[in-house]
Image (cartoon, rainbow over all chains, first blue to last red; front, side):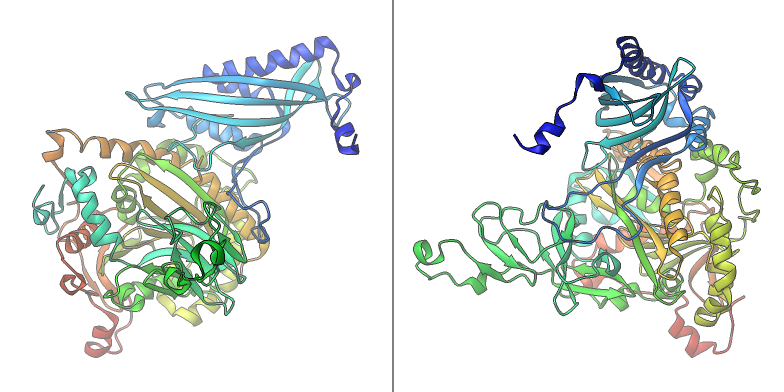
Length: 182
Length: 454
């Protein structure tokens, strides 16, 4: 058995205590429901002050590509701090985002949830797959699929999202706006 | 089929809606516009080393743009000359050669067919490999870093095609030593719109800013990260101009020399860069371009589907995918001379404002899609749409090429965009396409030497 294979094994001791595990799993579903219901201020309350919320822009490159990486990085579709996320919520709640009025049907499905002990003592890693279904005017529907790697931090008995890396699984963003949070 | 000549009434500022959805009109566009015009392929900064390549499109034709061993740039149709498979399936990268996935025919970065598997055994060494090199794009040329390709061997030179638009473009491409560069990777978004609608929107539609983007405007202006009074640089946006009449290209510009950065959460670093280098740019480009244009918000439109915005700092092409679909490709734009920290900040701000989840960009898609849909009906297809705002309120200005309307709110540039579209769509070949630079620099030099810009 190779070293890499052994390292890939996750020990039982890497799990959270059952109550903490369940609470965080619930939190992922609760978070999705808050966003589906457009309770954006409530969602902001689940975020840690130092949150980094990012979705990198990717391109299709050969596995053996020898090209240099872009000079100042590839860029991010979302590269958010808490003030930036508040700014996005301010925009959505301004009453002037015409694409969201009438309200669109938006539903999230969170799956493949894995929860492990995190880097810090009060932290947990959570991995999940997110599907967002959007039904907009007439027959216009979109399915957006992304993988998420999170760090959640327990503060005073509440799980707060401290870091989220979002991998958007589309070569071309399939919708003309991303007025949604992942 | 409509008569092509009555689809657009340029002098009246009217267009038949069918131009946004009629498949036959679209087929004509592929032949007479995308098959004829110089189309943006890449910026040289994206291909620094031999073997660097980008996969892009000219209309619906897929093209590989490759930096050569001699540092020239070539472009080829991205299709294997054997059975027609797509040759390269990566977006960009660096390669020594390209092998087709189907049977393994391998092509060098110069397009030559280098190897055919089992050449001896099954082709009996009778294949003439020289007849099966990749098919090159007829013309490839660059203007100060912007690389264009053209399928039409009878097209004018790139310099003639760009005409006096170059005088304005130099503000983006040649204000500082080292010129412009693209940063970040390609931001691709699929949109349900006809390709002309986003082009003309950005070419001249200052009218929609306050309304379509009201939510973002309100939110951004509430932003105060660092105590800097935002809203943002305290400039008066009323001073601006819409410049058209330059072979279909256009410029929409504010004239304060700093408002390009007015949507930045914290524009201080950008403003410091402008202040530090202003004298140098004035020296290179003269007083008008150096003081009034450099740093301003400027939308450059190069017909048919390229846009460069300074200040907001993005470059965008719209790849048509049928009458009602496009892929919108965007990159962030910097000047090579900028410090890395500012380049980084520009990339961050560009994606925040006009990226795939851009606070502003996300407002436009549904409007453009709906304009497209509202051209498909039996009745709506017969209707017209209007770009007649400020019709007749334009003219020459001494020292500045083009037909110029004052302010950034007019439909002057859109009107000229459709005029150019109409000139191409009704012309059988380049011989029938008029070329003009209203109030051109050559004419000005000949007729009114010494008159300086206001």
